Image 1 (tube, one colour):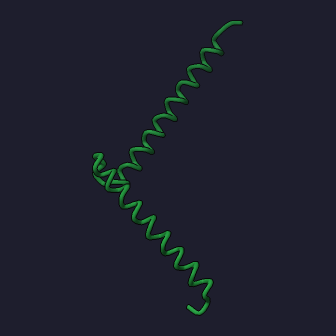
Image 2 (spheres, helix red, strand yellow):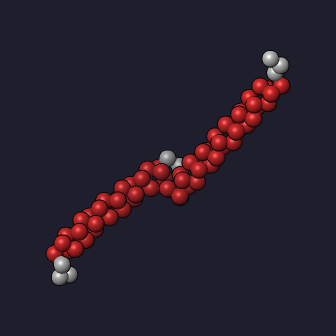
Image 3 (spheres, one colour):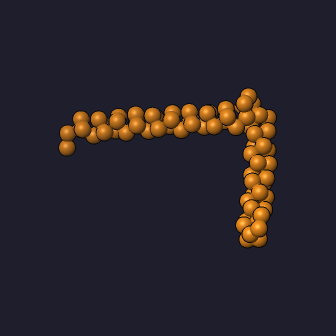
Length: 74
């Protein structure tokens, strides 16, 4: 590469990429050791499912609270 500034930026990006790849690999191993069969893939799926369940519970609670307020005579 003729442009020294671009070469320097590329080298920095390659270093960052290597660090991130190593960190992702380590997190994947940790997830597998915790029982997530496919590592980060199943951890992500479980996390999304938990978030969705929490949202549904919150919506249900809000609906019940709203209904109770509407039914109360003041």
